[in-house]
Image (cartoon, rainbow, N blue to C red; front, side):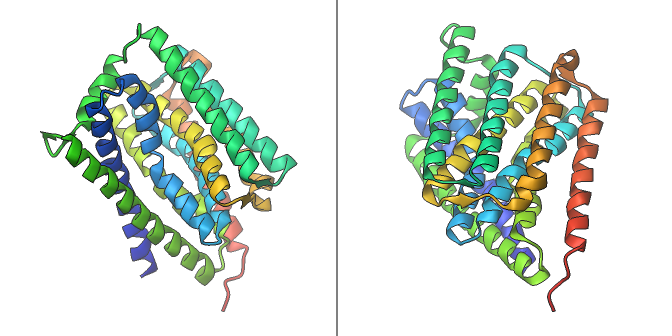
Length: 329
């Protein structure tokens, strides 16, 4: 049953996140919200809703280690697994203007998170508020810079993406249908998060595995599936720049939006094991991504192989950690 819980949770989160984004984008379009704002704010935040709901659910259920592990593990998976897989399919181009903006924001967010972990050891409501203010600052900067680069409009690729999102089963989405999809997507993600978190807690209790490890592996990998799917699709279609932008944006939202909002709802203790090891894996992965992206202005296939190998090595290290813990009788 526990595995059915996990599978049901993953499926509901994937469907719910997609439906929510489609509904919200359609409603925003009907109310004449500028496409640039929809693309930067709404789509980015909407695709992070599964992680957000999962983290809040875990924190409220008394499993903060799962919430923190989800954020750290998702960032590691996004870089090593998703970027690595995408680069193996096709070298990932580095659009310099966007990379300076988003790559810089990832670096600042990562440094801020590391400082909170080392100096405070917890993310309270004040820290959550600071993270959300930083997010607002990033979104304003992203909107302003993108508007200047496109002379006040939205890039053509963003327009095409939004046009695809404004259809459901091949038909345009009306405002009323958009509202139904929005609330339906929220409901699906809430139920998905419930099943996923409940299953993760049961696994941790039955197998003697720490909730932190469960958050870093099963939960993080599951909530990173949309990014992985996007990277594969982008690679197959030859739009490698979409893959990199999606990864950077997701990592920014994971720290600033998800950690920030969750900390306000329920203050979080940072697990010592994450501070000692996994935090530095996330930092190292971030540095590797930046170096690889700047080197030759693209992430080559061999660099993708290095990133992917790093993820397998990280998973193996967690496996060894689990093996060292005696299973309760």
